[in-house]
Length: 126
Image (cartoon, rainbow, N blue to C red; front, side, top):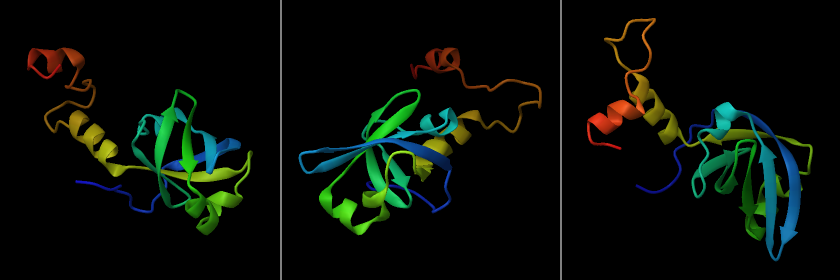
């Protein structure tokens, strides 16, 4: 399966920290809350203001994407500048995996998640 699974419902917003031109590319560095950053992975997809892009760098505070000239010229992203807010939508696949890994209808309300690293090791997955 290829492509980026998004719904058009944003997960939150970030702030453009920097915008730098390198050769024919434009690099955007975006700060985002940790509850959004946990779903963004290097070479994974993220939608910014509805435009599907690939994350090139991710750390605990921010991520970077590269805009090709065509994307910069035909979307609003080309006119964005540092300090601007930007809508962020993460790929739905990561959110579904997280939900499935933590869902257990037999779990009592005060019980912790049943899938842990020890559980995965015990069952040959880690």
